[in-house]
Every structure is written in C-alpha cells, then in structure tokens.
Image (cartoon, rainbow, N blue to C red; front, side, top):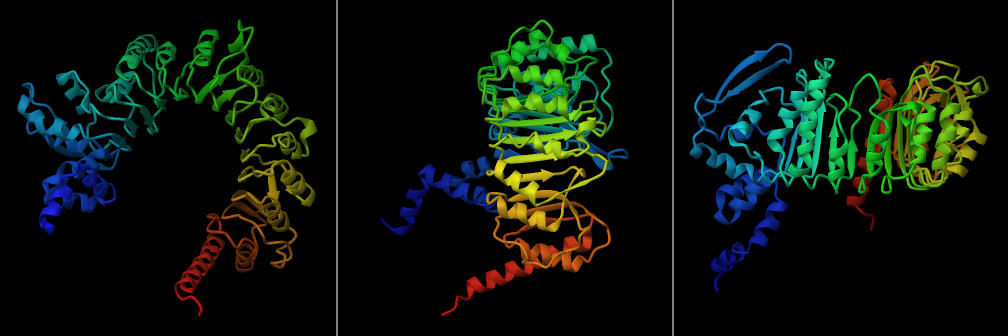
Length: 511
C-alpha cells in the first residue's frame, strides 16, 4: 500500500476527521470544508455548531427579501427581512435545513441589527422547529419590549425535544409595560403548558423578560430541570403563595433557584416546610426577615451551599443574621448585597457586628458583602484579621465591597498571609497611618487577584504604594484600582516586567 492510498484510507475513518476538526481553528475549518469531501461534513458541523446569530440562515432562503435603514435610536444600520406574499417554495428550504440541523448552541447577544421577528414568521409557515437539533438557546434582546408576545415570538421558533437550556434576557432600558395582565397571563400560561411536551429534557430555564404572574405547575413536568430563574415574574404582589411554594419545593431535580418577592405573608396557610431535596444554590431578591426565615425552613438541614441575597431596603441586620444561622454547617458561598437604606440597629454602631454574625460559617469559601453606606468607616485591625482567618480557614475569595469596612496595609497583608487559600481579594484601603516599608510583614501568600475600590485619604504616593503592593504579593497577576489610574498602571507595569523576566530566565537556563 503506497503513501497516497494510506492517507486516503485514513480519511475514510470518520473519527480521524472529527478528531482533526475538533482541534482546528475556524480559519482551518473553513479551508478543510473546501479542500476535501472527507472533511466537508465534520468541518461544517464545527463551523455551525455554535452560532452568535441565526441571521446567516436567512441568506440561505432565496425568496426572502432584505432592505436596510439607519436606526437612529439603536445607532445601527438595521436590516429588515421580509417574507414574500406567497408561501416560500419547498425547494427554498433545502439549504436552510441543511445548515440549521448543524446548530447546537445559539447565543444571540444582540439582535437589534435585524428584525428578529422574521423567525417567528418563518416558524408559522413551517409549523415545526427551525433548529431541530438545538441544545442551548441564549437570547439577549436590546429592543423595546412589546409585551408578553415578545417572549413567545422569540422562543417559539426554536423549541424542540433536543433543547436542554433556555436563557432569555432583555437589556432594554425601557420599562416593560404589561398592558393587559389577565390576557397576557392566559397567553403565557398556554405557552408554558406546552413547554414540557416541546422540551421534555429541559435542564435550565432563565428569563429576565418581565411578565405577569404565571402558573408554575408546568415546571413540575420537567423531570430533569436543574436551574430555574423566575426573578422576572412581576406584579403588585409576590408570586409566592402556598401553592407556588409547594410546587417549587416538589421539583425533584432542582439544584439552583432564583426568585424574588419572598415575604412573611406569602407563607400564610403553610404550617410546615419540606421539599427542595436537591437544592444547592438559592438567590433571592426582595424579601423580609420572616419570609427569608420561613423559606429557609423548607430546606433540608446542611443542604444549601450557595446563597445570594439582594435588594433588602428596610431590613435590619439583626433580622437577617438569625435566619442565616440555619445554614452554618453547609454554606460555602455567600453574596449579600444590601440596599442603600438597609437599617442598622443602634447596637450595631460598631459595624463589626455584621462580620461577627458570619464568623460561625466555618465552611465559607467565597464571601462578598456590599452595602452602599455613608456612615463612619471602621478599619479592621490585627485582632479582627486573626478572628477571620481562624473562622474562615478555607476562604478563597473575599469581597469586602462595602465602604463600611476598610483595611490598612498591614491588615491587608496579614489577611492574605493568614488565609493560605485566599486567591482573590476586593476591598477599600485606608492609608491614615501611612504606607509602611515593604517586607515588614510576612509575604508568603497565594493572592493572585486584588481589587481596590477606594483609597483614603485621596492624597498618597502612587509609586510607593505600587511597589508596596507588588513586593507584598509575589503571586499577583491581576490588579485593578481603576479609580486611581496612576496606581493601576504602575502595578500592572511591574507585573508585566516580572513576567517578562521570568519568561526570559526560563528560556535561558543557567548551566
């Protein structure tokens, strides 16, 4: 067998062609698709597997017409696709279908450059999924919401049994107006009732398109649902009542839940908790102390590992901390963002009490706290850092994002030194006692990411502080202090020089 026939024989093995295409760049894939018949199908499969826009498919239907006009509001040249008055001939669908079946992931982050509604019009003509083998659908729209129908028209053309993930986001700055809540809820309920039959293997559903309160019962028929984000549901009252809570608690495979509007009155008529047997991550927007406490009563002991709380406008810290104590054995990740008007009890004049209540969470690996307060700042000292490091021995990321809390240079370095697992730190820095000499504290640490939100007082020696930070954190690879451009630039310049020197040294080893 000569070399040529051996090569031809190798290309007859589809696994070899697939292996080569999996490691090729997009440019190489394009060339392979035009070079050899053996590579045509696997190369085109890879090229069309993940798409940032479905618009290229429209160019494959000859009978569609396209015009363009300048959209002043969006600031783009908007393309308008239109369907002819007569039905699209069957032959015009051939190339469309040939390429549509190759798409597995559609991530359209901005379909403001063309009329996305064209796909709904095409769907109405065909009455079948336009992308029959699609696995993930992630749509982000910047256009003005037009009501509940926008949700349906965006999603309906792409729903199919192969779909496992739906994420539908609206980035419009225009407030979503629900014109007729009753009619729109009925329309949405009809749509969601069909969802389990259309997408029986759906694992993720997330939507930020605000729409009326809907029935959650169809989600109980999605036996593989792992992630559910229904923070979008709006209305004058919370979506939570006895029925809704029991439905959510009964989702057997649910691991991540994101909701809003958890208040004490929602639990009237509910005498016991139970459910959420597989829930590991919970995100809540807008709640009160009683609602949070009652909701957490539903969770099995030592089950939740991640909790995100935000938009608490009228709570005292004393109302929230007792509810969180139920999670002390298991919680590993806590993101707590308080509203600007979150109350602090008189006893909390020393705002260390907020941190004090979290020292019981011995399993924490990621902790981020934010409160846009203008009250007097407190600076953590050596004793505070010692208690934190003892309590959070596994902490990998710490975000003291609130201006309530500040660190001085010694406590900053002590925190990084005493927490050997700490890799990321975000904080407010105080230089009231000046900048000490580098090397006065142990430098052994694993910190590679440092974000500084603010520095007080505003007058300091950027060059001295840059060298202090660089010398104190030898593993640092990512530094950001964007409000202070000179410091930001100098530290990153030192990091660049260090990396270049390390690379040069490794390429010229000493004999």
